[in-house]
Length: 144
Length: 116
Image (cartoon, rainbow over all chains, first blue to last red; front, top):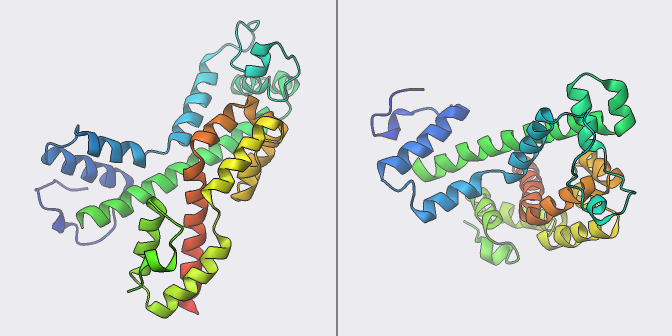
């Protein structure tokens, strides 16, 4: 990390950190006053891994619900259509029980809940690593 | 320097840019060799899309198996694509899933070709 003097060439080595690559990108877009131009806005949205955003949002949502409450509504389309058999139902509550440390209820709600939590976490890590690697690479291409 | 449009006319967009950046460090012979291997290993985004649509018929997650994400594939298969929500996400995201796999394959093949 250094102070941005307006010239990127003082980065003689290519050892960027994650934060660096994001800062360099935002710095250049701000410098040219183009941060909020549609084209640049679209390139930024294209670089974001929306799948990772979705998984993180899902796992965070499950941290804030109360699994002990009797269920008020379901996001499952099968459940809402009136079909009671659905292999995925209970997965959310299972992960929520797991957050509360209630392993027995978690396994009763859905046997794959705990495994699902770790699989999804692993996926989030893979996606974010890939995203920041690409940020780095594209910055190198775009801004030297 | 080899031309992507000549060697791999079927790829486009992000993938094309990525492959052309790989071709920058290769001579013509290596690029030809890379093309031959890459064409057999690459997954077409359209295949991923079709296979994702099969998820609505009950067998979800084939796209994850095809792109080497076996853990998530089993999760999708046993939970009906996480109550179909996961399938819908993959439907929106199918290009990125295919590109991610192709990018990994391209990196591996480029390494192989350069060491050969």
